[in-house]
Length: 106
Image 1 (tube, rainbow, N blue to C red):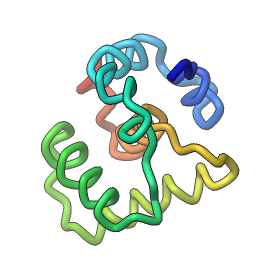
Image 2: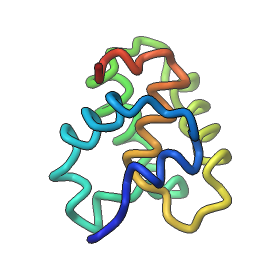
Image 3: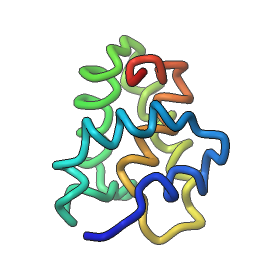
């Protein structure tokens, strides 16, 4: 899968921090290399649960209630609605930015 994940993020966050992007890319390179895991399906409840549990809670260490976290996921999904492909790197960057957690990847 030859996708420019950095350009995908910059489509939604033009001023995205390049150092954070490189660290995110390095962290999730394996996930992004597989077509079935490189994209996030906002319409799939199981996928949203995975993003909430694995990324927001485990990786970012968020302790907000599930409703708050799910609302943020839906908010990012609405922001990315213009695209047909919701790249995981963009979703993760936008969520980390939304919660002020970009420093996790510095």
